[in-house]
Figure 1 (cartoon, helix red, strand yellow):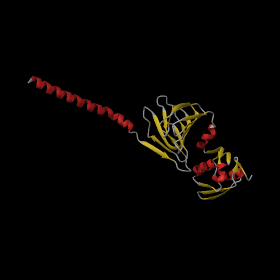
Figure 2 (tube, helix red, strand yellow):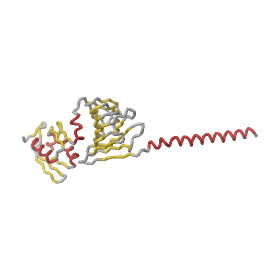
Figure 3 (tube, helix red, strand yellow):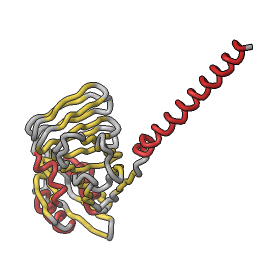
Figure 4 (cartoon, helix red, strand yellow):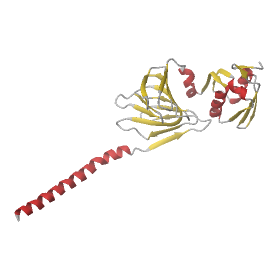
Length: 260
């Protein structure tokens, strides 16, 4: 008799305790779930388009052409994190010693407090980080490094990091100030940048033109004026027809034009 009643009572109270734990733990989880459900936003720029964003913490992000950035509507109390899906961005991070700022690409994670730096995530899964001021910790599959100002880290597609000290930061970040900078740049690479910058398609009629070398700076300049400068520098001829541009010429040997 009594033993059986005790067993039933103990069993009921044990079940009640389990239910109490389940209900209360579920209640405790609700605020955490709400935190993780911060709405995400994305911004995408097309060819010929640039964009500047102000994030909820006061940080500013400049997006170059053909760039996609994903970021929360507002940052949690624990961290500030954004994802550069592809393209190029320049970050001006508001200092917050309690919340580090994380930038993620497919191959790397950058961790900063208050810093200005440029990140380029290429189609080949290569991430290039150029530090202007402050400090950036770069983490990748095959290691990590801490950058000093005017240094650049290149994270290869296999996760290995190589560091270049004392790069030309102004040349590498001038795009954010609407300045197009070519520093010992091949015409092949310059054409790719012009296509993104002005939203056009450029055809080189002679593949020997691809190796021509250009060093020049253009601020708030029209495509026509840039091409005119190329004409004087390289002796090229060009035709513009709407969004299509044709460049012709004899090409270059050792980077120098053959017909000048």
